[in-house]
Figure 1: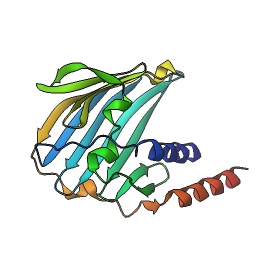
Figure 2: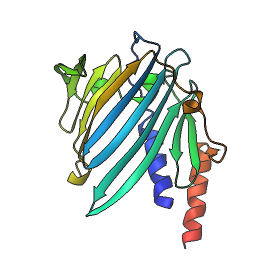
Figure 3: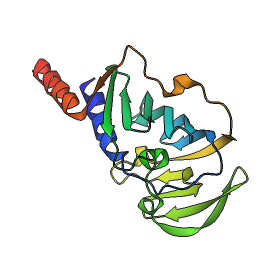
Figure 4: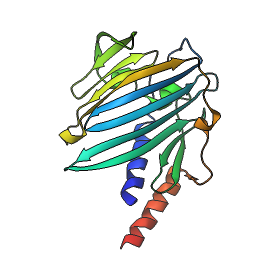
Length: 203
């Protein structure tokens, strides 16, 4: 559980990077991705432009050292705060976002993937490809619909994901932007204190 909380805290820092915001030609979108490589499973993004909200839910099985582990993860931006969920400890870490735009809160900027490298097509939709040494991403309306990552430390963490279903201007259930009452919401400082207490109990 301690390791899980530490990973969530690290992710909560890295994912609030800030993509380049783009004006999308739709009001809502539900995008389903499939993972391949070191991780296999699905990820779903729910984007609500009108209320500047986005929710990303993943269920991915990772294989390391011959062992497999299903990792359930969730990240959400409600227009003001970014939330990173730790389901192992029933904790949600919340923090403000510098760029209060849903797409910018959730996704890295295209330039973080690399340099512009042409145009590809995913599900009949053209996306702009950005490629670097260790990663690449193809962006459609500010949303990466295709991504590949090479991990510099472990080949077992190399993976790719690609959109396999895109629905636009469809209703999104309100519960996709809610937090269950059994989850405790902590700010980063409170999460650090919680981690320190866990260390003490481990001794």
